[in-house]
Image (cartoon, rainbow, N blue to C red):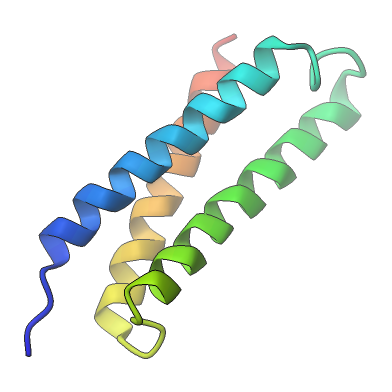
Length: 92
């Protein structure tokens, strides 16, 4: 049975965009701004955990924990979105 990776990637893109928007809202509400460098490190760690959680949730939801191709694709996509998110916030 072949798996529709394109559909998986589209759903993951939607979830990654939601994580990105959530962090934008948190950032704009001054949760991370007020304490300077220590908060920036916390922000990056929280962001990383959130995207890792998103990847693991997708693997579990689609029962793909043992599918190395799916795992590779999912982790690649979430890493790209996490990087994009950090780059967007570094512009602020």
